[in-house]
Amino acid sequence: MDSQNAVTDDAEINRPDVIAAVTAAFERYEVALMSNDVATLNALFWQDPRTVRFGADGPAYGIDAIAAFRRGRDVSDLARVLERVVITSFGDRFATALCAYRRTATGRIGWQSQSWVRMPDGWRIVAAHVSLGPTP
Image 1 (cartoon, rainbow, N blue to C red):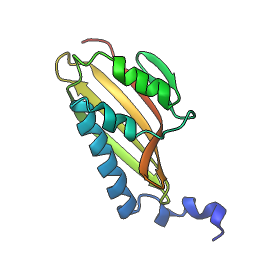
Image 2 (cartoon, one colour):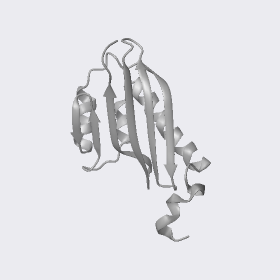
Image 3 (cartoon, rainbow, N blue to C red):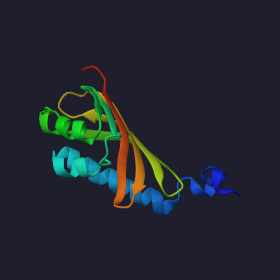
């Protein structure tokens, strides 16, 4: 098989070692999110102006805008329960992590998607999207 098609080889999709590494990074992110550990949240994003985060409060283009969002966001309704998490890896350098969650205080349902890339310093989020449904 040539290298262009390597990632479509079923053996390269969801390799256990890669799933374990991305799951650990995702769980680290979740712990940091629930404790509002801004330094860890920022560190888990690619430190680059091309990093993008779309959220309920609008888009943040670049790590500086993402860090500014983190510093200024309302943290009164952070607690959530993950209802479903799907992590899929492609080769040993790219993965997606998607989850559905429910805010514990309001019962609002939300969805989060993250694109993770293995960088020299570890797995980092290069793009993220968070949306939140209406209050039930």
